[in-house]
Image (cartoon, rainbow over all chains, first blue to last red; front, side):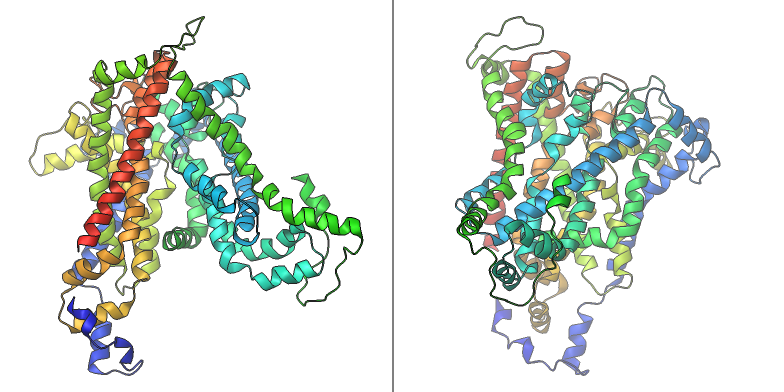
Length: 300
Length: 328
């Protein structure tokens, strides 16, 4: 490649508007085509959300009309009330269950993930690399592989149709440990750990007083990502929560869809309710979530 | 978690190095040694306990169960050896139909998904106003669950009053029955997958692009390389590890495809994936065998074959991606 033979651009004047510098800046300006592509991408990305509101705020008849409606109507409250009252979907119960399950898993993941991440990043112990490899491998195994014995196990534990079946197996996963390990490696200075040790701190106290404060930003991002992931779980709850009386919110949506008469404005009001908590999370912490996704990508 | 409160001492993290070890007694030193030796294992233990019970044990059990005719309908369990696998490979067209569907939709969704994500990331990597707005807007679909995506798109692709058919009508084309036709249903389901994941992958690519040294581009531009040339000669080769990463993630996810095709049909017979199984995936078939036909032993064999497929395609992806980008 010819470009490697050029003189290193570091020799360019760092400031000032020489011709070369100007050209280098121009290199990163967006062309009209770039703008068109981006705007188009944003429209495609956001339209289904808009449409969710349109249909959720229409009467069932208007939802099924030709041409399809493109503006919101005035029935949003009514449709939401109908979903909340729907005896097959039990969406209120589903929302409470989902909060409970996702919240528990989030707290556990952050706690166990930071403990194990700290151990893998900063403590010395035999078999560390082998254990780390097992964790990595565990992340590649799809839940389908063991779904049947896992189901039988849940039946034996009498956890079918109860929340422990969708909570306990997921309290800590490989992803949380890896993320905390990566962050702990650079965020916790070794000198600080040494100093605490010299002062007589046990490993637990080092964790609690030195590591936890340093890990706080990563813990927040891990918590957000975990909560979102768990809130949206479908496959495993579908297997073990067959009884519609005690669903998670995603299973409530499934019940709405299996109803004999598919009432679209009601279904869309349901999707709106099921998405709202994560929408609020995204509005409040969108930057952190995006930062977390991007940071994880660079390191992995 | 109550132990947290009881063991947390009030002391603040010591900053200076005061050489005053508190464990001066022999017992203290022993405790200290134990702490250094054992505590790391205690810290990583929770994962391994859960993984042993809910990960390793079910997998081993799957190997065993796949060699039996176990069923909740049978009083006894007999060992049948490899009979389940023989049947699966020689006498089960429905399974192979599911394999074809899964791979078809996997290819149809993954290839455009990663290409569009690359292009979007390349656009986001320019100097543009409202950088954060664009990133947020493009990432927003990840807040939706696969169930929500499937429900919204089911209506977009509805036969009677669907949005897509309305658009087709506008440009003078006839309506398409998106569920009846195999190819059409694959297309519809693939767009659901892509809508949710393109932005996520774009952010991952963007992060990787931002870590490429800008000097390389400036040098290439001075040398007269067009933007397209820069994209192919700098961006793509530099992104190789990231592309492999996203390929593997998409493979693991794509071959497990379940919720979107399941919810694409309303009603309770949804596990069969359309009237002729035109969009039944392997995971749907697995649950069909397990919960509708109650052939648990056979379901174990299906699960194992699914896993082998995922593992081999991931490996193939990895090798291919390495090969392709090292040729450049």
